[in-house]
Length: 170
Image (spheres, rainbow, N blue to C red):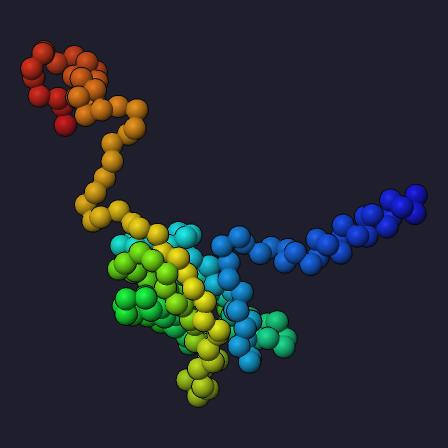
């Protein structure tokens, strides 16, 4: 019985050390005053697509969410391209959103700056690197993989009961 209790306690301690509700694509950063969780959507980001970043900011000492703060996320590619955008508040206390548009795929150096209000100095997280995958070229699309274009036209004609050679309905 004591062995089972010890095993249950060990499992509980290990579970408590794993980060609990940490998302697999979430970055956790700190500054002198803040703990910051950063999550991209989609993950991993793709070039030539809008990537929405959700940023949750808490006071590092008290753990309380920071509402009404100001911040930005920024990135630089290896070939010298730079992007950045400010945070917009959401309806969730301490949660902000922003979007970035990566113009090239590859490895980007990323960072976040945040302050409680405009009277404070921006505090910067440590930089990290973010792999950005190749995105679809603008205007590209793909057909359903199960049918070729000819099969699609034939299906529409069959389903419309239209005479052979007639244009399919719109």
